[in-house]
Length: 209
Image (cartoon, rainbow, N blue to C red; front, top):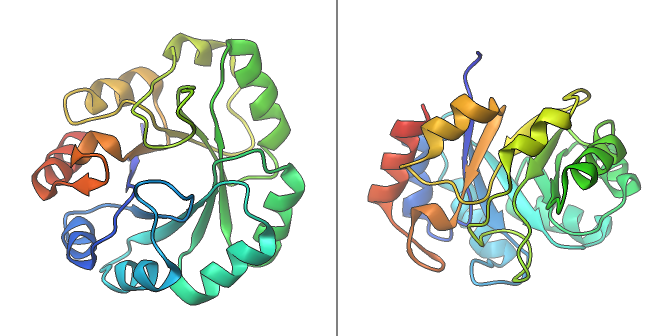
């Protein structure tokens, strides 16, 4: 199996970004989706500017239009747009045409829904990010989905990013069981909602790699 990429999502402090990138994170996420981890474009730019090495920045959005995403990209400098809402494939195509990689988030409620979602977006996105459904909404809820649903999925067209419920204690097993291209963590490296722990980030990176 090839090396798995690791994303630490929901960073708000530049010092956390520097430590995380130095420790080997492949991606760092900044959230524009209006929840506890939300940052302004200026705050996101400070986080992105603190990254070192080859760590790439991911801007996370919820049902934002392409024009807004591109404005935030120009202001903050992220490299990837992660779409966590009901954005259609046409939005993915538009953003990719503007030079952004696109990850489309899905929260399947059944194996059939997973297959339908993958088929809809696999050619429009660079990666499909899978997490469990929660009534609290997408992203950062720590909700997993039954990994056995993936047995029905033909993984073609794009990369698979696995999120939801991951932490240092279970990420190595999830990598073995699911064989994702990328693992993504947010609440699993926090002391409290929105409060990242450097110790937990470093522990997660060590286990994932």
